[in-house]
Every structure is written in structure tokens, then in C-alpha cells.
Length: 349
Image (cartoon, rainbow, N blue to C red; front, top):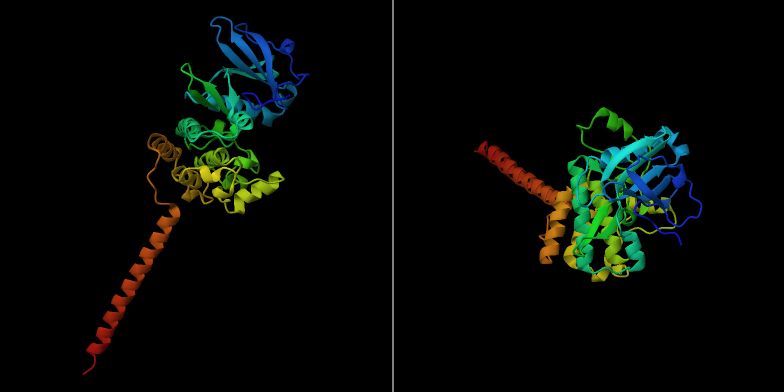
């Protein structure tokens, strides 16, 4: 049976497109074993010859490397993730090209299963387990955002669950292959590398409305995607199911969010956590959490206290602003009317 691996590829295929014999890696990388493969390449488990550390080697298919766009995406992932250093992001140690034809990167090997595999195996997580996973993922994304990087493809298959030495679940966010620099200070070479004009990139079930509409993206697109993951975990279904990618994308862009209480487990979601999720999934980007920092603070507060301070929404702010403007307009009108009446009355004998 084929299963998703640490890198979103699939294990269990009998005829790898890249074999161990084809690899000409540096001497310190040895003891290679095929871990997973897919349309873009393969991932091998390996060891560092001197330290004995377990590694994962991600190798791109040589024929794909001939395509400039594919090669740029591979290099893009390495360049971006090398900027990041966080306990909830898989670290890349080196990136090079074998024989001038086959790009590869060496990273930490993560033992465990993806959140998708966990949900397939055990659909119902406790609220404590779920919130702990959400807050760790938010920490990884917050670190990336501080470095000027948005993920753009967060989904359960890109969230690895492993165990710490004391048995606690540790989340590792994977696959920044679609990530994009939003920091205006980024160098021109990197910005050019990440340009994908006209392309809709991401996974339909977890894509933000602005991704669907090919609008400019900022860190709030990851807030929405994490909201989709949280909705899925807490209800047992994705926010917008559909029979085709086009249908799902259209729902993200235009349809109101289905009532969580109508889903298989949505009614069991605590109200405070539900408010957090719904705020993430606002279609209007200005109504969501303004930053991953805000979202993480609410998740940690809920995790530690079981409740969260209610924030005034963007809709409520706009409504209050309209009401204030209306009151001011009314008061000004009354004053002007009174002044005009007095002026006209002053001319009478």
C-alpha cells in the first residue's frame, strides 16, 4: 500500500525513477535507502558517515531539472528554508547539483507520520491534542513570516507529527516548495525566482480566497490555510468539499462558510476555539487575524486557560465607524438647521 512520506511523496512503488546506484553524493552521506518518490523526484533515507545522524536526501529527477521552472522551484525551496531556523520547521543542511544534472538537498530526517495520516488512522483528536498541534504550526509559520516568507501550501500532509525524547508530540511544518517572499527588502534575484504570474498554486481544500483569485498575498493567506486545517481537524470534514478542484476553489472564493455545528463533530468544538477558527476563515482578508502572532497568542491563551479574550472583528469596527459617522452627520445637520433657523428668525420683526 502506498503512503505519504515526510515529503508529500509516496512510498511503496516498486520501480523507482531514481535508484541508489544512480546517486553520486558526497562521501559523508551514505547508507542510502529509498524512502519515497513522486512525479518530481525521490527522497532517500541516509546517514552522516562521521556523526551517524539520520538524514533525508531529496533528489529531483534529472529530466525535470532540464526545465528552468522546475529547477527554480527546487532551488527556491532550499534558499527559503535555509533562512529558517525553528524547532517546528525541518532544517536543510546542504543543497547542490550532482554531476551538473541532478539537484539534491540534505535535511533532517523526521520519524513519524503526517497529520493527514494521523487523521486517516484516528479521525478524532482530543481538543488538547489538536490545539497543541495548531499552536506549534502557528509558531513555525510565525517564524517564517518574520523572515519574510509565506508558506502558501499548508495542509495536513505538510505537517509532520513526531515525538520528543519525553514523548510529547512535536509538529514539523514541511515543504516550503511553493513559498514566497513578501518582504520588500528581499533581493531582486530571489523575487524574480519566486514570480509565478497567473498561476494558482496550492492545494484546493486549504487555499485562501486571495490565492484562488490570484490577488496579492501576505501572511494572512497562511492564517486562512491554518484555519482550514483547524476546521478539518475539529469537524472531521474540510470547510468546502467538492467533486472537482474548480468547484472547491469557487466555494473558497464565493460561498459562505458552512455551519460548523452541521458537520460530523463540529458541535463538539468548544465555543472559544470555534471563534478562533471562524476568525481565521473570514473571506475578507481584513476581517482575519492581522498576523500569525495574533493567532498564536489566542491559541496559547486557549490552550492554557480554556478560553480566549473576544476580539472586536473588522466587521464590527466598520459597523461602529459607520454608526459614528451617521451620528456625527445627524448632529451636524441638527446644529446647522438650528443655526439657520436662528439666522432666519433674526430677520423677523
